[in-house]
Image 1 (spheres, rainbow, N blue to C red):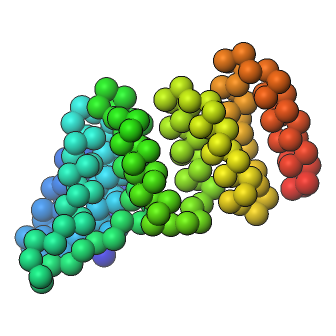
Image 2: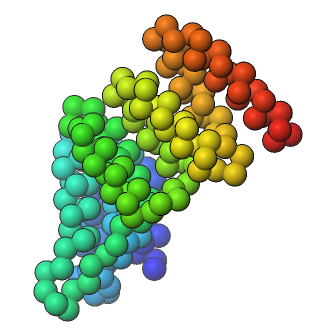
Image 3: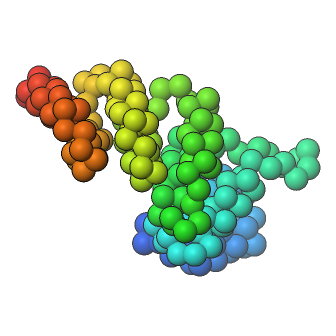
Length: 188
């Protein structure tokens, strides 16, 4: 809908207030109900904005979309992108974001979608490194190997290689760099 397009435009620049105002207009003037695109865009606005209070707002939106207020209202099933945007909101607001909640969301996403995209694994890898868990990041890199056709995501691999080097895990960094080079050669 046009309203979803407007909300997403606000979200792209992190204008949470304007996105919420547009939602209010959408509900009052057109009597349209928000859908998964609406909620995902609102959570996206929170993830890009990153100011205090956006984690709570994003969590409230995530809960609201899944609530049935009566038997006439419908449950809105979150998509992979909805989960990712909420995880990104937690990552964007380190003072409010909680690593344990990120892992709960990751588990929920994996239960919901057994074959996530490469970008999802990259986000999980980034979260693990943000939490200082190189071992978990290496585990996610294993998932990238098996989850994607080419088994390679240069950004995820670069993040893990850099983290291994920074933490003195040079042997792992060297092995990953060599494997990345082999995989890159196969793609060309």
